[in-house]
Image (cartoon, rainbow over all chains, first blue to last red):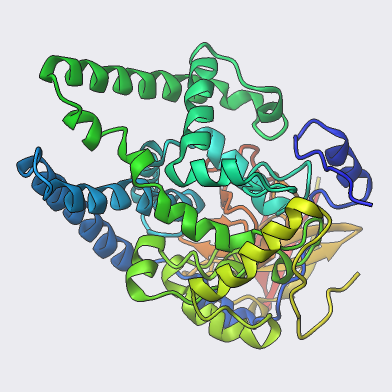
Length: 345
Length: 105
């Protein structure tokens, strides 16, 4: 018999997870010699500076071309590129810089983190703590605030979120709550009280920027300013959502082994530039200190102890889509990944 | 009062710019060695979510927690920012006759 689970962080499943020792538990980790791991964890600024200059350069170029061709059909491909760089590439940038691993220099991580958070409309303080919990309790129901496909899946929510309409609308609603110094009951469970002032300040800054962009549009009599700031979070989100569904969708909940609830998917160099190697997701969850540029080497080091990686997004989606379709009828269904070694109990 | 020094490990058990776990009296500690050969000691668990710091990255006087990347200055114990918000307890450490000694008083 299928039972509907309570994904809220203040519900019965969260309490059950704590009682059952699933909260803050010890997770399986593949054996990697300390010397190798130390080498993989080493920080350097070079790759992230190169990638960030390229990212900003392409944003500037595509945005400028979009403005110059505005009003013609040529603006469509320009803003398609701009939107993907703004609304999708920012996903991996906030993520890696939030972990503090992209750059060696701390302020560079902080600066890119703040910019990328704004682009993808994720409040930096809220998401820093939410993501810490996601790593503590990955896909533990009632504990992980970042389970993006809950069972049974909602096709409508999944589809509208390809343009960030669900996540974006929720965040805009929360900006008004945060701006007056409040946080939600769920946020209280993973954000320390001392962080409240930061949340309030950022929410006010975000709202001020959006108000300014709207005023600029009215003054200019055009939506072009919003096409550059604000709207690309939505019209450019689809690639990030396409990638992110490969991370965990359809896999096991409430297990303490990232090999069972995360996917590593091989991607082409262009996708990996946009996604900053987050496609090596098992590796990232198991060893979050390893920078994105070292994840392919980490993958080589542990792949013998991991399920076979997916040879591309299509192979991953050939598994994900039927599983989600089945979960609509049977929420207890999930994909069982084969592991070379069993998870210790 | 005279400090009591506890033998933690051989100095060569900790590489330069690295950390090692050290358990004593039912508690866990972390001993560090800098690139210059100085040694330091702190509590062994991250103040954020009690992860063993010995699996983390040592870099320029900073230990980064292997689970959530919380950062501490292991020379002073100071937490360097979210999610590490509570300072680490530090302990005096020294090298004598090739051994790292820690004062746990």
